[in-house]
Amino acid sequence: MAAKSLTKFERPSRGTLREWTAGYLFASPFIIGFLVFTAFPMVYSIWLAFHRWDLITPPRFIGFDNFIRMFKDPLANLSLYNSGYYTLFAVPIQLVISFVLALALTQNIKFRDLYRAGFYLPIIVPLVASAVVWQRVFHPEFGILNEILGWFGIQPLSWLFKPELAKPAFILMSFWMIGRQMVIFIAGLGNIPETLYEAASLDGAGALTRLFKITIPMMTPLIFYNMIIAIVNSFQTFIPALIMTDGGPENATLFAVLNIYRQGFNYFNMGYASALAWELFVIIVGFTIAQFYISQRWVFYED
Image (cartoon, rainbow, N blue to C red; front, side, top):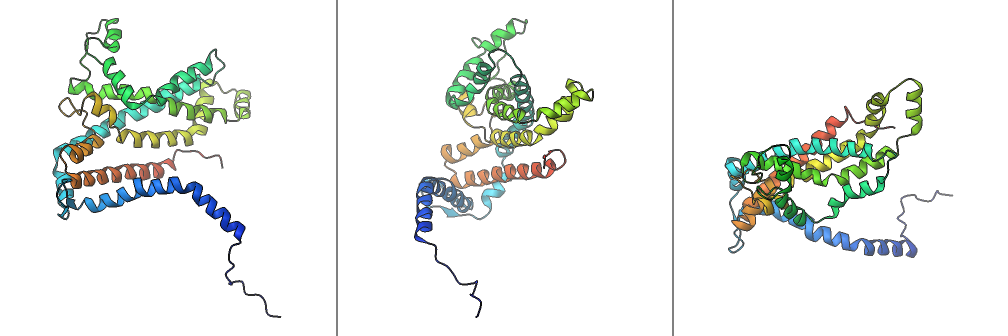
């Protein structure tokens, strides 16, 4: 008897089709939202980057003019420098502070849950509200930060009005949002087996040795994850700069996304803004790929 062909197509049963239909129906809000609000704008912006469009007249094809202008534009280069400067200093300090807080808040201390909630609370505060609050904190005459510095005999500083102080002020403000990183670190610390610490203690390892030989190596995957997310978020800084300084003083806080917003919605250069957006996209993706490559040398995975 001839063997039954294995290449014959078998139609799915009614029950399988019903499950597929139900699954796609439940996923349809996300799928439709992604296609309409993410995929289509990205594809359209690629097309628009090769055109000149002022939102009124029809788009006009200009080839690579927007990209040539992008590389020659001093404001575009300055905005990338500002974003890079902010990322270079803010991200490492955020990781160190959030990791130290996680270490402290995994100890058996009183009101530990209250402290955890307090450090996480700024995450759920809208960025607009946070920017307004920090604008008052940095006020040269009535700000609480200058009030605290006055206790140590330091004269009031014009944080948001001097170019040399504006970016450090934004870096200081970024520490307000480390709660998400802290919670991730706390979860990771709770998953480190206690037997590793017990074995190290029996071998005479002290607290610092256990920290650098066990805790940090075991936490490197989460350190890497938090670093990638922090870099992406720092390059996308927009709302605080728009509300607190509007890119000033002297374009010291003109970050890349704020410059894209200005070109598109203030100056109505939508084609040029699309080219700038894709430049930023390529830079962020490049940083991410480079970090994944470098991570092979320092990230430890248990398997």
